[in-house]
Length: 267
View 1 (cartoon, rainbow, N blue to C red):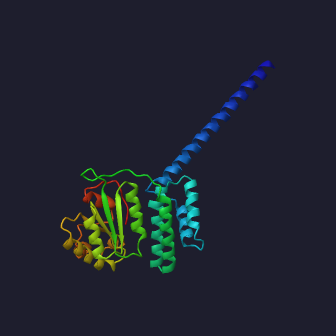
View 2: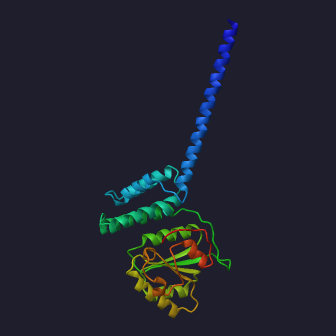
View 3: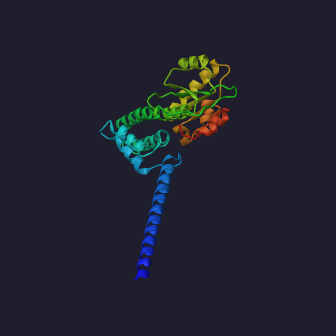
């Protein structure tokens, strides 16, 4: 009888230990899963399809406050602001552009949605820290971003935020006259000039702009052209515009300009 009681106590202790081990394993597995999910959400190469759909619905819906509510939910869930600014917002903007092209979204709906995303971009990205980048003279590198069409601004503002968060000094010129752009280049020191071609129709205006600043400014920094019109191909854009490089790969653009090569994005 005593032996049976002793055995029962041993079995009970063993079962309790086994139960504890299982709980510990489950807890560790849950921590690993959550860490994996967090890493995946904040990896610039990955997206959360549900989050993308929620943000798209908010940007194109009837409630102007929905975008902010979705962003707060994402931040509370552990998504980093940089992920929202550099992955989610551009992806939603791309889908809105596809909707316009496919005639499933009206121009006014796309315009309103883009405005909401641009406001969200400022709200979410304004407190981001930076990782300083410097030019060869030991000064903070400075980039001028130019777009001729002032109504196609979201992509270039995403790029501006991306560069600023990494420590570049960025000046944005949207729809300014050739004379105003020339004055800006003359009165500020830039290490690179990035042009954004939002549509094929913007190419002639960009060509006139490049020709004008080359005639007026003797020592011009490298001029790089990117954007949707470049991505489509079908034109000798470099020959038409007279820029130094045509690419929407920011790594390639920064490398060509002798600046840091750690960023990849589409403008």
